[in-house]
Length: 376
Image (cartoon, rainbow, N blue to C red; front, top):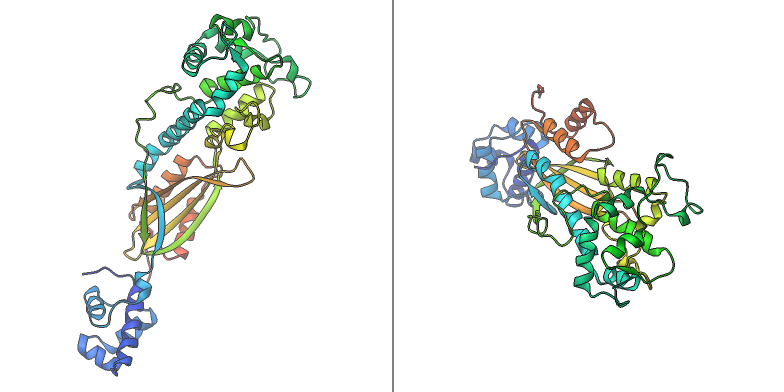
């Protein structure tokens, strides 16, 4: 036996009456055939009352289902069965995606081309990929390089960019970057200071902002983690509410902090790893994984009175807004407000959600509210 809403009951009754009329049957005959009180059928036709599920099953079996009940909304998204599952996996999946982007940059041909043009080995020849990356791995773990990354400020940039926000009494007294590189048999091939920007960028990628304790370039820790697969769904129901706003993104804030500290303007966040003939595709695409700065949330009510939240996460760092993730989360109809608040907290949204206003909006679109007395 099916389970029907009052709206579905009305659609079935109207459809049944139309089909019956085409067959030459009257409403009185429908009532007699299916033992329905005529006044109840009239009120059900207007949507004022709902027929019993068993009666509606008999009507659809005899007269067919209205096309409107078969309509649905197509969604392709990561499926999460509970809000607890969403809360547990949301930031973890973001970190995995971010780590994969870092590895894509580390392994892309443009990155290798850049470092081979900038750096030479002891024989004044370009490094082969394996040896060079092996040396860079050791360099990034070196405390001397980390100190240089934390405290060094290029003099050439002070004429172009605002003064550093670092404390004025902090000054770097350690070895120069070239001296540190020489310890690893890495020599600079270029006369300009592009290599300094490059190594600041490399440090930024490696540990300046990611905060991923398990992450190292080319490791398998993150590549082996499972990422939710987007699946295809059709929701038999309708959208009842749409919300959108800004996210408080820690990685994005850490990025801004980095560029503020290092006297760099944010547009240098697009420093290309293709030193010559730079193309957009060769730029550090991992930046887009940092700019998870906007969300939209759509609540759906199915014909069986189940509720789902579709969550879209966007990167708005460029002119075009790019969708980075889409999740479909099943809401518990007995605590829908509580579930929504769990989602908002996991997203870390900018604006505080007014629970009372949320209840009002849900009531206006016909959603059932747990703990709220319904006066029909």
